[in-house]
Amino acid sequence: MNALKESAALLREWAVQQALPLWATAGFDSGTGRFREALTLEGKPVSDVATRLIVQARQIFSYGLAARRGWHPEAVRVVETAYEAMVRDYYKPDGGAGWVFSVHGDGRIGDPRRDLYSHAFALLAIASYIRATDRREALALADETLAYIDREMHARHSGGYVEGLPLSDAARRQNPHMHLFEALLSLWAGTGDARYLARAGEMFGLFTSRFFRAHPGILGEYFDETLQPVAGEKGAIVEPGHHSEWVWLLRWFERETGRTVQPYVDALYAHAARHGYDKAGLMVDEVTIDGTHRLPSHRTWPMTEALKANVAEAAAGRPGAAAKAAELATLLHRRFLAAGHPGGWMDRLDADGAPAAQNMPASTLYHVMCAVDELDRLAEAA
Image 1: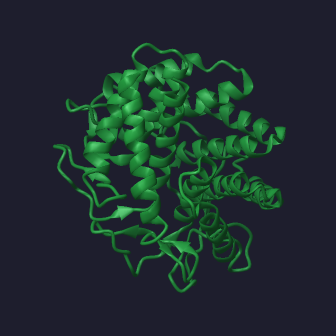
Image 2: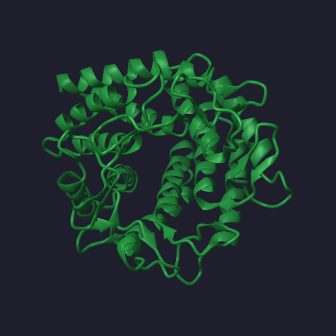
């Protein structure tokens, strides 16, 4: 527990003293009220790129969390400004229902697609805005967004939702549904409205019936239009980071509902622990069902999700999980966070652990801040 407390303090100090100030200044365009898509490795804005809705939503989450924790003095102002800009620029800007995928710096629509993944994060941003400001009138927008998803994206013959509109022939993924699950749990946490918890239960049912494969105990990533695993190599892809993320979400769902998740957690955690790390202790990006390292590079976000999973399992009493969380926190800081510009990160390492990122994507802060928060809460409880 001493190691865990030390690593929690290290990450909290990095977040409070470096990351939150950086992304509220260099990472924020005060003229438009929008967060920037990315910064260079030297901490300068990356220009001439469209900014995705998920960046706005994830950064609103990050500063909403900072507001609740008292980690940044301007957090509420940043949240309010960015939320207003997000709704203004991304919600129905072309007169159609739903949220567009991206906009240019001058406010022109960059990509008009209605993307399920992005809509899930818009819901998370609304929940975060409500929790930071207590402005529950924003729930009307959450309900409009959910109604749009139900009306236009529901896959009636297979369950779940399509990837987006216009429809494409791309494989369907579990990932957008996972983040919809997260957003619904966040809406429940911020409002206490049982409707959102009931809808989270529907996503849990989709996980158990479609995405989780009891034999061999893994989470599939890619599915056909009937939500059966796609044929061939793609159907055998496993992402240890998503295994870890589901462990954390399932434990959250268990706490809120009392429904048992142990068999799923045990299987996902075990597969990630057995196959998801390289010899240096870094989580790899992709493996196959049999554990072969298919994509042996290392993104920042799988490390944060592995950390969150071990925090959740430590709280649930799993032996060794607290020590593993401390180890992962130390590796995260040393290999990814301290290796980049102060407050930023080296977002990708190659298979040999060498730096391999061209810039610092803003979307990563959401993963890191959530991990910092979860670890810090566990340390406080200890």
